Image 1 (spheres, rainbow, N blue to C red):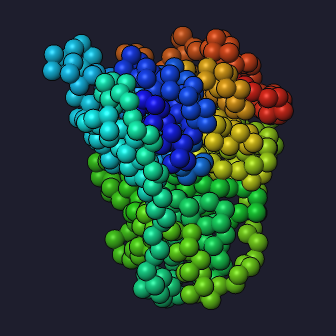
Image 2: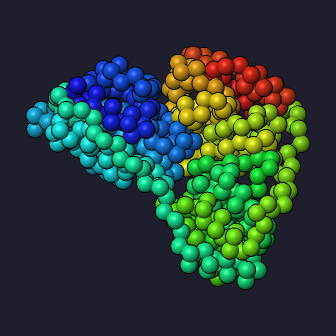
Image 3: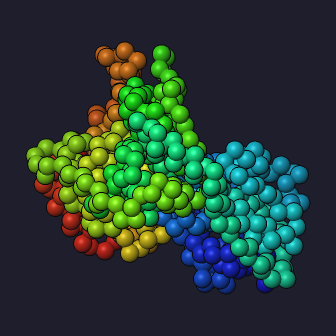
Amino acid sequence: MDCAESLLRTALASGVDVCFANAGTSEMPLVTAFDAVPGIRPILCLFEGGCTGAADGYARMTGRPAMTLLHGGPGFANASANLHNARRARSAMINLIGDQPSWHRPFDPLLNSDIEAIAGWSSAWLRRTGSPDEVATDFAQAAEVASEPPGRIATLILPLDALWAEAAGPANAREPRRPDGVSRDAVVKTAKALHASGASALLLRGAALQEAGLRAAARVQAATGCRLLCDTFVPRIDKGAGLPRVERVPYFPEDGVAALAELQDLVLIGTSDPVAFFGYPGQPSTFAPKTCRQHLLARPEEDGRAALDALADELGASKEPPAPTPAALPPRPSGALSAEAIGAAVAHALPENAIIADEAITCSATAYAATAGARPHSHLIVSGGAIGWGFPGATGAAIACPERPVIALQADGSGMYTLQSLWTQAREGLNVTTVVYANNTYEIIKVELARAGIDNPGPQTSSLADFRDRPLDWVSLAQGHGVPGVRVETAEDLMREIGRAVAEPGPHLIEARF
């Protein structure tokens, strides 16, 4: 077999069986090798940012890495925005970058670039394969690194001449490392602090925000009265009826400071001190009061769920705490749409065990709050602030969990960055229902202008924040990518169309115009 086939067989042995690909000339050996290794599913994405966004969504739902196949330095550069989001989400991912033959690079051909410089900032592990003998073993190490808790990005540069060569066979897969356990000392100290505190909170991330971790956190809450918090841009949280409600730290500094103002003790599980998204004159960069004592119970690479169980046991918490007070659904909406009405409509129409892929941007907070009392579901949020994650993130989540309906909440401005992922959803027949917040404006720009004291921007400034003079036709855009689309303007129609879309196989798009 050639080295490309040996790489894919090593991937399969390592538990990596999905590849989101946008290949070019230098990747032809890998493209043809997919027919020789049928256990790996290659999925075509029409833009490299779609590959990395989908791999991120896949990793958030499985905890395992997918591969991406990218073409040279420019291809990796196209993928970089969603690599930023994946790095912030601590998602596992393996990037394969095809490059010029090693003997051709010294001539500086047109597509030649410094891939190491382009890829280095986002990759926890980066290597250029030096010889055909290293291809399979390099991949085995990339898979090992990517799978290190809580998840890392590994990037392997593959010169074309190495892929064409003959190989002895695949490399041995390496056993993924399990999350580290937390120290007994950290558990005891945290328990003492919570016992003595008059106002405490747990700030949760990672496995601590999945169902088992949340039930452990509920035990701690029942024993101490602490609040449960999560980051503003949390990669994944399980929510809904039967689970404890977790407060999302507000976006703006003044709101974040107010939300945490009374805290005396803050326990960190898989995360760090909340930091403002932007720096504003006269506003602090961090939200916790200076008098608040912070306690690191579990680092991101440690087992946050087990840490919460150990903490609950140390506190003497009941194994079966009282059922959490159910969050109320918002009133059933009616009439004209607004951000609040869309969030409420989604909450009422959300099917059991759904996955929300949320790139609603300025409308995200209302959707998060509205769905707190909805049927049980997982909620994924764009995690690094780089827009263009929503469509591909939903695509990857649907590949990861084909038995679960995906509801994508997509702002219209950021949706234009990666709408090619609609085509992938259509080709793969994915059960993704996208609700586009179609206000034809970059609302966050207007918000920031107002915060800067610019209440009446001029026509040139306004033209950079609004496109209502040339509104986007999302129904046509969806249909052009092979996805059925419909436009709604009332909450009643939106709820009806979500129900219809979820009941029918394959992707659907609903343009919610307001």
